[in-house]
Image (cartoon, rainbow over all chains, first blue to last red; front, top):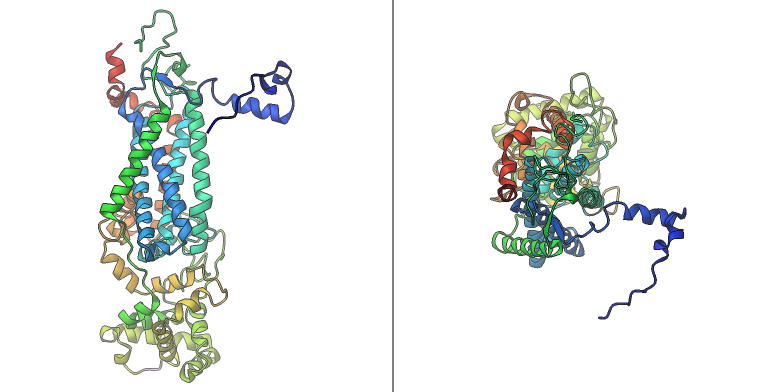
Length: 229
Length: 313
């Protein structure tokens, strides 16, 4: 499939008169473009210190999330109880379960790695905070997944979990024994929340770049000696 | 300067460092392939647990005495749901965190009258069952004190009967309670009780609250769960049926229920929740907590992470 040829003329947004334009469209464009430094949305080079297996777990976590979403979407095709009666449904449910286990395993390793690297240095506090919030959002999403299994497990978990939620006043609005409510939270509301937090997290990572090693000095400063790539 | 940089001193701009080739898209595609393959292999090899739900009919057939005792308990107001408090009713005050009662704050948002909703209303539908219909009429005609005396006496008698067997209960003044409890058992055994609890007032039964409250008021569900090490004091919050990993990420939440003072506290749920909320906020705020935010410097693990970079300096 051939691609639509790109116009050789510069876009209107790039024209000098539009750089200072006060239209909402121009303002939004400037805001999006300014979220990360130019060329850092998807760079094909990284700082030389990004050379450790620990960096793999962030992207592995993201990849697991994609498997979770895809297998979850397939499960929605058959409905709430499909996986009890269909071998295909049961298999997809199994993929969903194990991708969740992998997601949390890689996320926890990612979080511990970032803790030991003190990756909040250099004004990256919000990057850490959004990562931690993504973890807690994922806990809630996984929990509601256990509630909507419509089997013995969900009977037991819901009747037990209600006590903690009720004691905190949350159960008054978030009824873990209401299958319909939990279903909507699990397949719609919570994935959107987690997706939004992860998106902000990724933008912050690209905005600030990967945190330099602890003790590293500015290689552009006079007298500093940094390794060449 | 130290205060502004979180105790670390100035951190260089990442974009100022020499770079190396790094194919992010290729890395993601490979990670996606690996995670997909691992998930599929795990699914093929280990499958996933799916122990069927306990139906109320199954409950009636496997533990009929428990159904009768639970029904009598609902009438006597001695079951968990009957004396729960918010958000179901005002029969209890709920749990306290010191002087604060968060449970009572929102009030009753999901009203459940255990005697009426879980027993009397379903039994009332047995219009062709003369003993059951008569028993309900007698119950409703009696004064609350009389109702309480009948139901409590029957609950005590069941507890003292061999195996809790209703047929072996000592004779006494139980009023219509035995007949109502027997009718509840009959409804459960026929398979009709679930529908009466979940979709009696709505064609689409998507709210399982009442059916689950009734089931949890008995001992059959808990017995089945404890047999699979799913009890709260068995790390059950993170356990799963069979030999599956469950929710291991809830280990810390589960831990507190195993140790004092939480393990023996009447307010354990709110205490554990409060502790976990504080810890969670602390976790999110590590970059701003003096002492904790600079701890990694002293742990030294970062030298392992960046050892190749350090070796080239």
